[in-house]
Structures are given as C-alpha cells and as structure tokens.
Image (cartoon, rainbow, N blue to C red; front, side, top):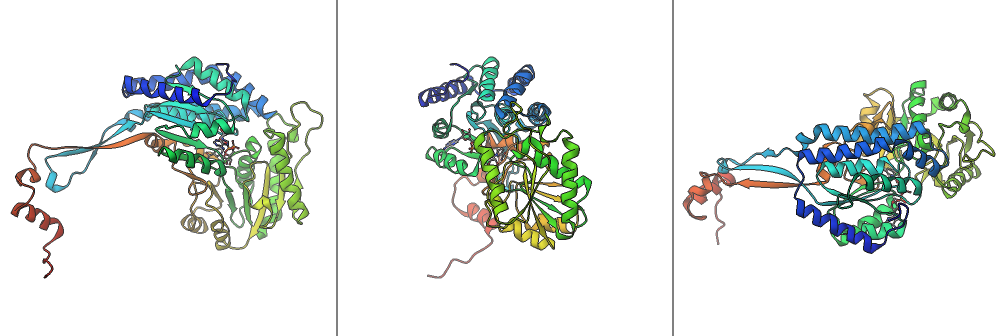
Length: 481
Ligand code: NAD
C-alpha cells in the first residue's frame, strides 16, 4: 500500500487475522525476542529522526524542533530503554500466598501476552502517543495495529513507512484514515484497545469495543487546574506554568488548562506570566520555538473562545504579536491570559487545548477544592506552593490523574509512574509496570502438592471436612427447624 493511502475495513480485518494467526503459530515471545523488537523500534526512530521532525513540523505549520526532539522522540527512546531494562522483572512469575490448608501446594501469577493490541492516537503528539503504546505492547509480548490521526497526515505516513521497514505486518501494522476508519478500527475484536483522544470520541470507542468485549485503556482529556498558593506567584511558579501552557502551543493533554491564583497575587501573576513568556520566546510568537495551531478550524475555535469571554466582560491580555505574512506561520496564536471569565463562558467549560490561560482568583484552599470538585475529574492537577498544609489538603480532597507539585508536564516523563486519568479524563493507565500489566493477562496458576489437607480428607464431606470448615467459619449452631 502507498504510505498515505486510506485503509478499508476488509484490509484491517485481514491484518488482524494475520497478526492473530502469527501470534498463535509462533507462541509467546521470550525476553530476548521482546528486547530485540524494542531495539528495532529504537533504531528505526533514531534513523528516521529528521524525517519525523520535518513531517510533524509540516503538519503543524511550525512545530518547534526542540519540542519534537524532547517531547516526542526522547520520550519514545526513554520509554523503550526503561521497558528493556525492567522487562525481565516485569515478566517474572510472581509467587502468591496459599492458605494454610493448601500449604503443600504452590500458587503463582504469570503475565501472558494478550495477542493483538489496537492503538488509536491523536494528532497533538503524533509520534510519542503512537510509539510509546506500541513499545508497551511489544514489551508485553503482543503484536500491534496502530491508527494514527488523520490531522497529521505527513507524520502518520512517515510512521507507516518507518514501521513497515522495521517490522513485518504480522508484527506491527499501521492503518490510515479519519473518523470512519477510526470507527471501523474500534469495532475490531482486538485483545486490548488503547485509545488516546478526546472524551467525546472515547465514549464512541468504548461503545464499539464493548460489542466484542474488548478491554480498553482510555487516555482522554479535560480541564487540568494549576493552583497557586498565596505568596507563590514567583518566577519559579511561572516558569512551570508557562512551560506547561505554551509547549506545543498548549496543544497538550496535560497542559494546565486554567490557573486558580490567590486574589492577593493576581497582578504579580499577570506581570510575571508576561515576563516569562518574553524570556522563553525573545522573538515573540514568531519564534521558531513557538509551535503553530494544527488547523484553521482549531485556531478559529480558540479565537472564538477568547472573543466570547471578552464580550462577556473578561479582561484579555495578549503577550506579543503574531507574525504577519510569514509562510507557514499563518496559524500562530498569540499567548493570551483571560482574567476572571465567568463560569458560563465556554472557555471555562471546554478543554482549551491552546495557548490561552484563564486565570481565576480564590481566597482559601477550600474554595479552590470546591471549584475543582464541582467539575469533571481532571487528567492532571498542579499545585505551586509548600508541600504540606494546603497542598496535602488539596491532594486528599480531590481526585485526578497525575499530580505535579511545583512543576507541570514532568510527571508524564517519569517512566516508572503510571499515566492515566480517572472518570471522564480516562480509564486505566500505561507507562511503568501498569502499562505492561494493562497489555498482559495476569493468569493465576495453582499447582496441587503431593500432600495437603484437602487431600487427606479422602472425601469432600464428613468429619474432617466439617473440622476444616469449623476452623475457618467457627462453630455455628444449626438453626432450629
Ligand atoms: P480525537 O478524539 O478527535 O481523535 C483521536 C483518534 O480518534 C484519531 O485517530 C481519530 O481519527 C479517531 N476518531 C475520530 N473520530 C472517531 C470516531 N467517531 N470513532 C472512532 N475513532 C475516531 O482527539 P484529537 O482531537 O486527535 O486529540 C485531542 C484530544 O486528545 C484532547 O481531548 C486531548 O486532551 C486528548 N489527549 C489525551 C492524551 C492522554 O494521554 N490522556 C494525550 C493527548 C491528547
């Protein structure tokens, strides 16, 4: 197939059939083969580094090459290295406790590969959100079919080309297409399906998967708050928030969506935000390190959110000016603060996914906790301030995906931490041993010993069996008739 040709339902079903037959024919791969597959993926990523960076930048209009290196390619290589070096431990049979009665027996858990894993990816980090799930699937001994996003067509085609060189289709296959192909893909009877994308599409994917009882991991989105403690609108805090908000121009699932700032610190926060943006991007939004918005439609939606908030009376502060008449930079969107927009503004209801930061003020930590708890559980929660007191209360009284204290985004780069949301922001997790286990089947095995108590009973009923039951249940009087 041509690297950019859309796939049909028949081809997808055929690929799944071939991968499943190959899996059953070859049996579960051992440690050496899994490591070899990971090494092949690593080598492919490094060999295609420049091509992938070019493709993703062309898809975005402009994507900072540093961002692609650090937030995509380095993440993938780091995840592969982590998985390779911990794989022996992850794969190890786990001894489990057996009850006193069965002491001469043994019990253990074995983590088996599931078979074929489906991976559906969004456009915002089109390389890492396709390849880290792939590396996890391979580490767990599976085959994989990938469906990257249609909104980054050059990157998706480059991934297909790269993976076709590195793996036979019976091991790893890439299918291309938009929502229709996505719908057909999510209806395939995979052994596991990992979907990364919006909550709205996640619902459809889970519905389709449920017809085949395919277990899902859903990595979704939402509005992740950044709460700044009183007196902490410092340079260090703003460094963390600006980095999280403007990397990839805010098109990051775990970007701080909005900030809750103590009312005494509002003006200091605004001034330092602007100063930090200027320090990060001295050439302004025209800087080659400031990423563009992925499509005209997404840019128009973001502008609409700001204009709506302005009309409703919110204070809007733009930091810098967009480049005018520069080829490839037409979809740049200026970093923007929106102060005290009302709860009814769509800006305060929808996931923003762009370089716009609404700032709301609060007076005490319980007000901030109530604000977070009145909304869907977020994918990430950020707190800037001392780690005890209010921070401990916030963590105890809220539920979210991962937490960052005095920083943003960095929790995602910790390979040993599980990554996933809760409720509307996701279901299940990957990264760490959690990812390996999500794509494995934990099979419990009980091995009968030569001598054990039930064996001595000779018959399943009688005096000895009654004694055994009494040891566990205590002596009970039979109810009188
Ligand atoms: P999306 O849900 O629109 O698309 C994701 C994938 O689903 C794409 O491959 C797309 O082709 C496919 N798809 C679209 N419509 C479909 C349908 N009806 N049936 C089946 N598949 C369909 O998401 P997006 O716009 O590409 O990405 C942005 C969203 O992803 C944001 O909400 C963001 O928060 C979320 N996200 C989450 C994470 C995470 O790790 N939790 C990471 C990145 C992005």
